Length: 322
Image 1 (cartoon, one colour):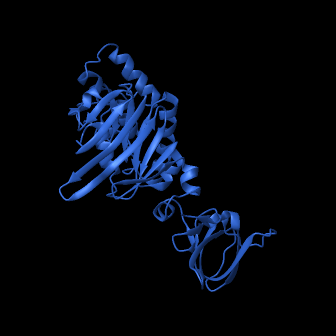
Image 2 (cartoon, helix red, strand yellow):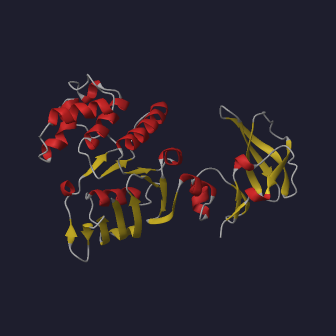
Image 3 (spheres, helix red, strand yellow):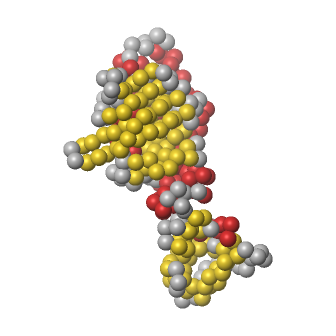
């Protein structure tokens, strides 16, 4: 199974939300649409789901056409066989956990072995024994697992996640990040996940799609996106960057050394400490370099405001953006 999105465009009045977007999602991949608010990622997800109709372009699942402006095809939501996990969980408050998970099966006429399918889904998300509870009797993390089970029980071709962790607190969000990733991979699902959180994208994804202003700027593995950003926006949005030459040459903070390096191809800079933040496993130090501006560097030892620092950077760690 491969989802093929071809030149999808969408306008809301005078606002061009998507500009001829093209993307391929491979079977079994966990693909994340990443970008700031208003970049078009949620609009694209809703179009894939069938909740929003694009103005132009085509969407194919293998050889099956889901949408084509030219051919006048727009398959309805229930014919696409996609699961969806929403930001607010979207659980029916008057239904039990069992009834919520069974809802999609009943709605699509898949009533054979319904009890067995629901109980297997409950076991999959480790909620055995909670089938008679109502959503308000569950924690946020448990509600999220019910929402995932409801999507997965349909055995969909594709599961779509619309910022599903944004309503959770920081500690629970990190736990659920691992849980969702493991569940998707263990079941063998194909997933498209929307977020504006770069940490989520880097930790969870096989492939990241960086979007801005209705366009796809770069597609690649987390490592590739982080280490080889295609343009300044990507470098700024993914991780922290020190710019040696504005929007042309950068080095990541972890590649700035405060102890001399015994190599020939090393650049040396001097600066003054402006601020120091303790972030748990290290100190994050903001250094003012006269000829360049502010640099972020990391160190295990605390520095004081006003300290003079020498910094050493291997030339191979300086990345140039074309």
